[in-house]
Image (cartoon, rainbow, N blue to C red):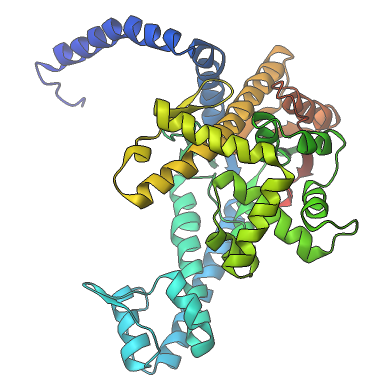
Length: 438
């Protein structure tokens, strides 16, 4: 039987609809004043149709692979738990941070325990500092990684499979402050890939019979956006000539013609870190140098690319004056933290001022690419379907007879989605499951 509807329910809904209607024109007027109507009409509204189709289409789950991975990981977790208890010499709940802290710092007597109201801290930073003190630490770190994968992803995915053997993730279009999409039930945008165990989870997702996954992702899109927004001539030229941007940066910063792997690694760290307003301390941690060396490295970097230094100064000043920053498509991110009396919040506001226009513009570009690709597939009556977006990457389920065409069409559409003033580049892979896409 249908649930009983309260007598005032219809009136309540009607009132909501009336208020929304009355607010519509006011909202449109505000968007027009902010020059954001194009963002609404040309990006977000068309994208809602794309996302609806993607959610409806979903991704097929290999149920046998899911069963095997779930069983194998459960056995590994049980084995790790047994080994941890053996090394501890006492029986305790490994999943309890309080009990774990008591075992590590009281029972085993490990150093530098910091006790709070709820017990000793056992976060990853604490554990990393204890690795050399006892073999139990590596086992605990691995145990936590596997239990997270098991509960959040393997069990989470299993609970999200519909009767059609597919998961139909829900895309949040207007949740993040940067304009990026997020997803849930299950969250397919956040599957960890830094470990092999995390990457293995991507094997769960397969195309339909006689179909393939074609994945294309933007290469260094946020660096390209930075080069465009700051008008960094050396970077723009390097991207146009398809040079290795990290090698180019290392050559200029270290004043060498031949770059070794360590120099390139350090240049890469600051290339990407500068987008997020990285400071000397964080950079020193990333590349294993002293804070002073990291400070000198950042200074040399900004001397090589003075346009970036000017951009950083100007965008923060703009944010302080106006209270927000914008993407190239006029998406705004308000930054009230800049006026905070708390130093750490103000510093967060500065970093956000630097990154939000870059990350937001990159998000806008891939949204345009999704719209263009979706329209191409529909207008040309293609059987292939856009099924997944993971930030800078699009994944299309491609039928066999359209494979050769799609390997050319998808990158071409993505690279022409927006005239950035800096060459956009993509890489394209084909696989019989998500894992096979590099």
